Length: 130
Image (cartoon, rainbow, N blue to C red; front, side):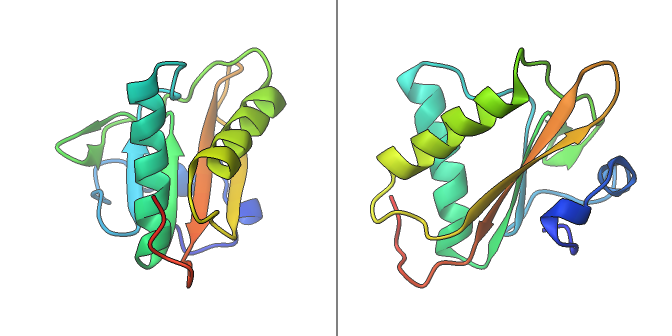
C-alpha cells in the first residue's frame, strides 16, 4: 500500500515503486483494465476482495510488472476515466458479497492521456468477501 492518503498520491509516488516494490499482501499491479469477459471481471473482483479480506491495500491498474515487480508506469487509455471509475464501482457493489464497505478509486495522470487507476480497498471487518 502506498503510505499516503489516496487523494495525495502523485506520479512521483508511482515512479518510486518501479523496480523496487514487489507485489505482496498490500499491493498488486495490473497492466490493463478488466474487460467485459467473465474471467477478467472475476480476476479484478478477486484482487480487490483479497486486499479487503486481509490488511487492505492498493491495486494499481496501468502498471505492468515482471515477477511481481513493476517495470514501468505506462497507464491506460480510456475514453472517459469517470465512466471507467463508475463501471468498476458498480462491479464491486453488485458482485461481491458482503459488499466491501470502503473502496476508493483515484486516477493518477501519467501523460499523453494515460492514467493509472489506484483502487484502495480498506481492511474490512465484514470479511470474508467473495
